[in-house]
Structure formats: structure tokens, C-alpha cells
Amino acid sequence: MLIELRNVHYSAALSQETAAYTADIWIDGELAFHARNEGTGGADFYHRVGRWTEAEVDAWLKANRPQRSLGDFACDHDLELEVSDLLTRAVEGRRLRRLLRTNLITIENGQILQYPLRKRPLAIVARAVRATNPEVVIVNDAGEDVLTRALDLLLSGR
Image (cartoon, rainbow, N blue to C red; front, side, top):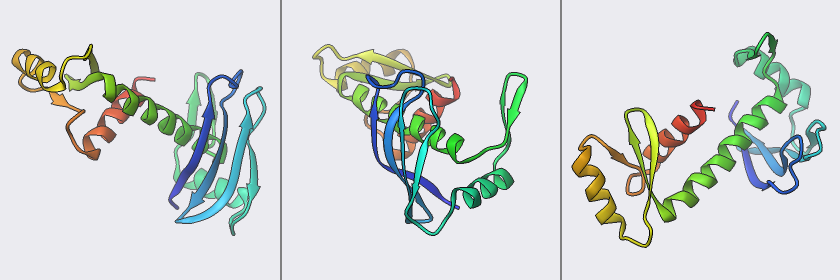
């Protein structure tokens, strides 16, 4: 089961205790639910529009994803946790793409580092960084696979 979020609209300003968002949940290439959370601490709301029920998706996730541990508390993976993970990935991916406009983003020694461009050309800053560390991976001029790797590194540190 491939679960994706599309048409994500996130509002940091409205997010108080939980993430305020609306999104479409697609499962195996078909629209399954419209999702939303008002950001005031309540649970996510799902409006079913596809063939899957929330219970069916929860059962599949429970069987195919590991339990989530939060300190001494463990809970089964369900649709709300899956959407939370996907929403975090979407929001952080957008933030990373915005940073690429004004910073040189690198992967160095398993970490993500950023160097402000300060109106300097990207090539000059990249050359200076490569002079000090020839093993550096520059995210700005790399493909989607490197951007995905950078995002994975960012999210693993959370």
C-alpha cells in the first residue's frame, strides 16, 4: 500500500498544539481521503472519498509498519501517525527547497550544513567549500536523489 499526501496546505501560524493543515490522502494512486486538522490539539479528521476505510488502512499499517515508541509508551502505527510523518516530510522538504535559494546546502560527514550565499554566486561559495573538503556533496546542483538523502538526514536528527 503506497500512501501519499497531495495538495498539502500547512499553516504554521494556525498550528497551536498540533499541525494545522489540509491535504488529500492518496492510496495506490487513488484518492482515498480528504484530511484536515485545525491545529488546536484535536485529532485529524478524515473524509472518506475512496474505496478504503480508515479501519482497513489502520489494520494494514499495524501489520506492515513497526510500533512507534515515545519514551515508555508504545503505540501501533496508524493512519494518523502515517499522515504526521508524511506531513513532516512535506513541510521540511519545502523548507529545504526554500533554503536552496539563499544558501549552499551540503552533506558533510553525515550532516547537513548550510552556507549563506549573501548575494555571492553559488559557484564561488561551492568552490571555497570544496577547497576545504573535497568529499563534500553539494545538494544545490545535485539531483532529486541527493535532495531525498539530505531530507532523510534532516528528519533522522529529529
